[in-house]
Length: 582
Image (tube, rainbow, N blue to C red; front, side, top):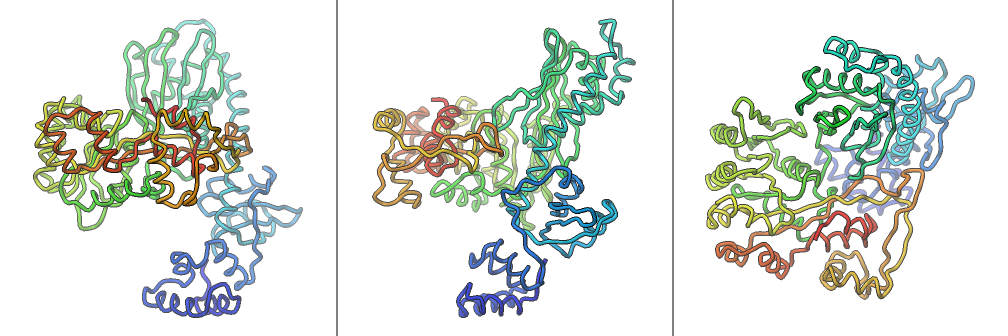
């Protein structure tokens, strides 16, 4: 929703929100850029989006409503289906026998208004709201749907108890029928939608002696979601195998597959793995959100000097950027975010991946298929003949892939890849173990990022201060003087702050989250290849020597970065130590 720039300019000057001289200068800039004045005011930091929305509402004569923190009845909320609400940013918040009041971000979206009018058969009164209000209300859909999904699954699971009564394992034909059975379809669809809404990264379906346990991994922690009767297992597994195009009657060997679905306007790919266990087949599905747009390095948790090192590395036309860490530590997301920065019309980007976790426009992505000979190494050989400027290799697993990646970096390409090491300094010894010559490593590697993911605290949290014994305990594991220096340099704490006066935070149960956490944020160490680290690598230096030298040159370790984020109120000290293994 956009109002006239001249009217907006006059209103802002008259209201005294911004000095006249600044408004005139920005108005001139918006004319030169052919952009709406409101957009430029927000981008320059002169107005918040909320303030702009309120000003526009006043000028257009549309009532403004603030829905932050307001609980809306699900009967009213559900009058607008969630996919429509999310797609058009429109929610119902008040209803009378003849009128439905809706809040929108764009009151000129006549298509959405007309659709809702036909659906509910009531007069629609539009109100303007801000993005934070819309976000809060859309979150209420999830809370209400969780309860609804639980009821659906319980009801359909009870229907399933009559499907298999003789106790014998069903054959392929019976499994096909089970997979198409309406209760089975509803249960699996509900499990998938529930997992997406919960923000799960994995769904575990685990057969036991007399029941099936469903667990979701949310923010890195497994949670029991529900328990189903044992008789539900064959149908659920069969349905998932049909979706993933796996063999229905193969239960003795592990299988891997993949399928896609869409929920609440979001495309999600599911990577499926089945494994024979004592009581049947365990199924694990990894949820992969297929769009990476909207991520930024700052949003992932990078800051200060490490962030500058990464941006410097992205400006290089050759060399390697490596990310390291265990499975599920966010390495791929970091690389895709860097690719998103590099993804410009004047470069050719090609990737070889297993699997393709995110889909990116204008990027040529190739899926590894070892069964037909398309390995990382063979795929990489083909990629370099495709005239790429930038290459991403999903993972360097062996000597051949490492050699080809380094050769590509030496011959005029920027190469991004991942390694499985515990620290940034451990990447060099790992490459040496793969029999890569030290002089090749130091000639190609620009920067190495090691990372973990910690749980992010909700807005509702409990403040506390460290005691002297707690500070002494921290000092045994972390150089607190280095951390304090960083905190002061980045203006996180006052110049005269001491540890006893710096607040930390604990999780607190709230409506938003039962355990006080929502989402995750990265903690990082970023090692820039310096002359002294090159010299150490050429001598065959071990990881501890390289890390010591990097710390002397200012590298912040993951633990230290974790403490910085704990001071910022993003996470807890306990969660930092939970994910960083010494």
